[in-house]
Image (cartoon, rainbow, N blue to C red; front, side, top):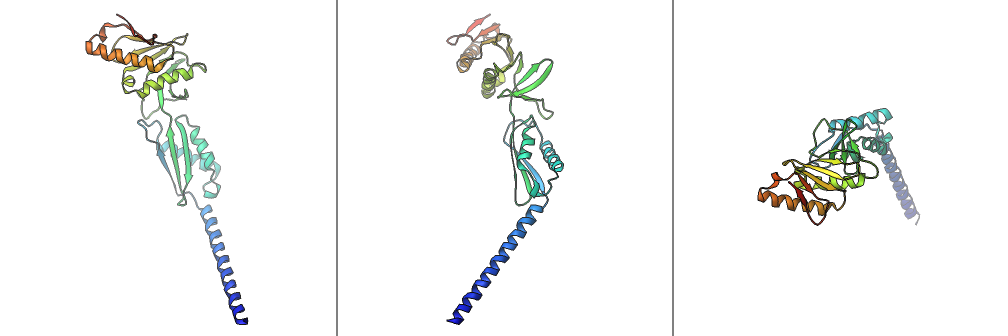
Length: 244
């Protein structure tokens, strides 16, 4: 009986000792991992047709932020702050920054997508589908309509709905090259291939008006009569009124 108790006691002592060793090794590993330097940074872009900001620029933003914060060690790295820094760039819509156990800092970036080039007070900007300004990019030039006139808090949503509709439609994206916003809020558009103007009226009933325009365009193109028109009026949702 005494021998059995001694064996159990020795077993428990060994088990407790092994547990302490494992805890010590784990703590050592965690502390060592935290104190390691960031090995490198990798940048990934969400799939998109055009690239308005380079991986080099994103990498530079990450590295500068890490250096300024003195957080080269993984322990001190603030991932939320890095995301905030990237998201503050006018070309970036959203970012996700993560750090792997391999010490590699990974940034997944979604760029803003311009739907128009806006001329305002002698300055030119891109605007995205939310009406947010974007500077022109040195890397690429987006094929989007040129917009003139006032974009205000009151009309931003409606104007952007029209521009997004144009951008998402393969025919309209090729055909509509200009949009003029009149002081009363109505829209006048320009076609790439023909000299006629398109009187869209107020930015309402967007789908119906553009369906009417496309039906008119393809019918008149088949009849070879598009060159005869000077104005295509889409204000009336049930018909297209044309002026020669």
